[in-house]
Amino acid sequence: MAAMAFVAIARPYEPYGWVAVPNVEKDSHVQYLGKFAVTRYNEQTKAYLEFIKVTEAEVLDRGTEHYTYKLVIQVHDGYAVKSFKSEVFQDLSAPGQPPVLNLAFVIVNGQSEA
Image 1 (tube, rainbow, N blue to C red):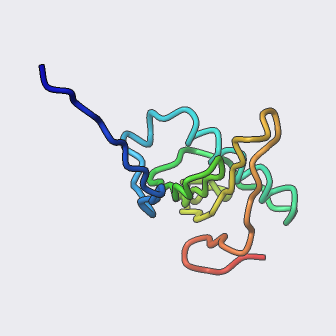
Image 2 (image 1 turned 180 degrees about the vertical axis):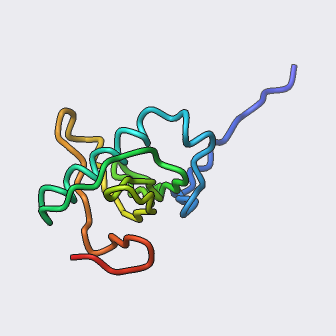
């Protein structure tokens, strides 16, 4: 009988970069993040945008428990429907803590907002 040996080779984790989120309109977590982004934006700018839905999302897998989401969100601004772009950072190692909104990346219909 021949002896067999198995050798495991460890490789460093390589994150894949930005990945599109499939079925974004049915993804409850992404919809939650979009609603959070609009709520936080309203609080910080004294605006009154009404969340409709997230229409596009990408996630950056950093290989840790930290994720960054790029979101395109539809909102009502008065009677107009507008697009709202945002980046949301989420730390999954801190359960129960809210995500962090990076306001540097908020754009409403191509116009940079504070």
